[in-house]
Image (tube, rainbow, N blue to C red; front, side, top):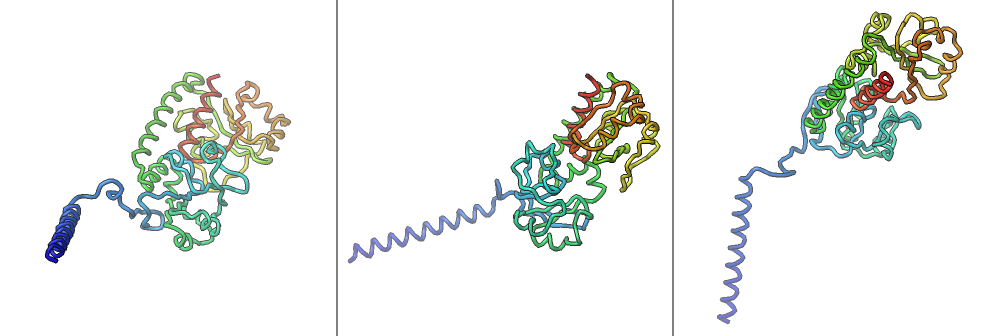
Length: 318
C-alpha cells in the first residue's frame, strides 16, 4: 500500500513539474517575436479608388481582369483570366493557357465559382452595374485609380504593393529599362530621325494610335522614335477612338508603318486594293510591317511593352 502511494505521489509530482515546464516554455515563447509565416501580417490596409480597403497580405486566388500582364510579370498566376467569349489575351497564353476564363464584365456567379480571396478591378468604371458592394461580399476588392492603371509602370508598382511583391516589381522595371536602352540604340542606328506610326485594323476599320495610346508610348516614349507631325498634332488620346478614313492616310506621312491586326481582317484587303494606300511612301519603300498579334500592341503592361519593343527592333533592324 505504501509502495502504491509512493508511486502515485511520484507520478503526480512528475505531472506537476511537466506542466510547469510547459508553462514556462510557453511564457518564454510568448516574449519572442514571431518568425516565419507568423511574422507576416494576415491583412493590410491600402488606399484605392474607393478609399481604403483591407485586403489579404498574401492572397493566393486572385481575379484581376485585364490586369493579368502585371500579375504574370510578378510571377503570379490568376485564379481566372479576362475574356470576351473565346477571346483572351493571346500574348500571355504561354503562362495562362490552363487558367479558366471569366467574362470581361465579371458576372457575380462566375466570380463566386472561381472562389477568389482577392478581386482587383482596373478602374471604377470596370465595376459593372454598380455592383461594388456585391463583389466585396465575395472577397476583398481593390479598385485601381484611373491614372494609375493608365500608366503601366505605376500599375505594376501598385500591383507589387497589393501582392507584397514590391521587390519583384522593382527588379522587373529595372530589367525592362535595360532592355529598352539597348533596343533604343539599335533603332536609332537603323533609322535615325525617320518617323513611324502604328495603325490597328479591326473589321473594316483602321485606327491610328495617338502618341500616348498603348504601344505608341513604347514607340515614341521608350524607344524615342520620331513622331510624324500629324500624330504629334493630335495630342494625347481621348476616351473615344475614331477610325481613320482612307482619305486621311496621306496626311500621316510616316516613313515606317506598323500595321497591326489579326490575319483575315477585312481592312487588310481594303488597304491592299486602295490606290491611296499603295501610293504612300512607306508602302512604296517596303517599310510597312504587318503584325498579326494585336493583343500586346493594344494594351498597357510590362510584358506587352517588352514584346512590342522586340517586334519593333526586329522589323527596323533587318
